[in-house]
Length: 376
Picture 1: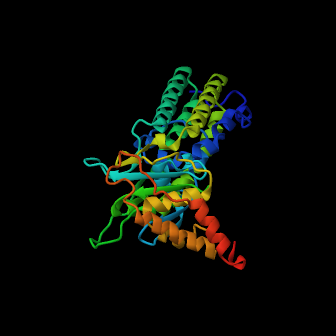
Picture 2: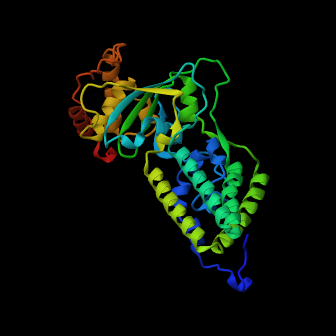
Picture 3: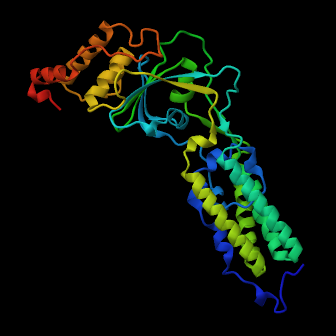
């Protein structure tokens, strides 16, 4: 194996292709959390921008989304929806002023663990990176390139070391008590004026809407900091060795990192749901009479009240403007919703028919009747 040329240390090169090894941080970060749920994350492999996985601290929970979460009958309230619930219900797909109703249940016979999909896009990224490490390792041995060999070993096993530090499992809240509680239905009110009504049991509501997901890591914080330190040193050492590899191996490394960066970017652009195994939860969209999208916030609010048969959550979450006129309209909407038979009449496969009520005329009447000083 050759490490140095005839000029000794004068042959060392530091301004080299190693820069390619640390590019692409954003595309790696966006999928790093779900990737760390998979055992393939521990494979020794080439990873673009491995420094993105060497952080001073690890997230304790998944990133929530801004949205009012309201217990339809319990009086509970939150100002954001947890990551898994947003992912399961595809909250980003709701148009402005739309109303959707879904029933979510757990699947019998399925594991209650929420994990990364076994052969999702992130799995193939790991396999691709591992394949490239093996190919470059074989070429380095064939060409007798010692620096390239050390670089491959350092940069490949760095991913395994960092994988151990970031490896985690998802903990969902379990209901311990067995007391009677109000109906667990939940209303999600997104900033664009859309409403998503969720019909579910108490255990599902606790897991997805009221108790945050917890990240249970394989190693503690002290061990993780030690791993981060070692990983930083290995990364610097590997990049230096990579810069002193022969031109043939540098071209191979350059091609590998270009391909990997492109692959990570493509996977980062895919819907996040493709990487998750959410088969434990089964979601059914309940049919509503009329279009999902509405022309105004008031129409959407009326339909949401009609589906839940109550306006308590409207008051708890301050969903409607605060004025006497709106307060009276909300009370009338609730009364009209309760006066009619149940929306689905126990047949969820039949589109729901909303009570015949002129919500627009009622709002005009109440706003005109209320004192001007109370209007918002």
